[in-house]
Length: 149
Image (tube, rainbow, N blue to C red; front, side, top):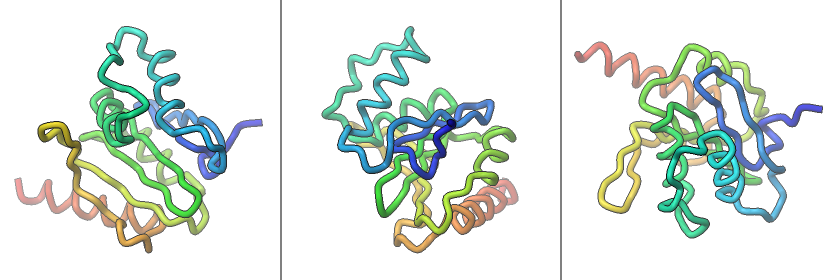
């Protein structure tokens, strides 16, 4: 039986829109351990020496975003999406079809490495956004960005 994103510990949505779900939200295993396994399996040519269990989750999300992937960290009370600079139509379709119920989520986009930190533009950090709410704001910001060019 396919595990749903809502129950997963961490999920990756690749450029084809396929959601790769790992673990269960209530497991004690760290999110980053799943990500290390995922990167080793799917990107064997990538040097992961700079990615360790001690790194912040954002570091992993940033590396996966550079490869065009969306990363979703699911905690019991809140979920956080990290977007690459450009979303594919397939990724958008998957995001709009995800059923996370009333789970509160945030989105971090425009990820940048500044020194040793990963910086981003956040949406929904107040903890009162559903995925639908966060996506509406994200798409609105993207439309405004394109209109200004």
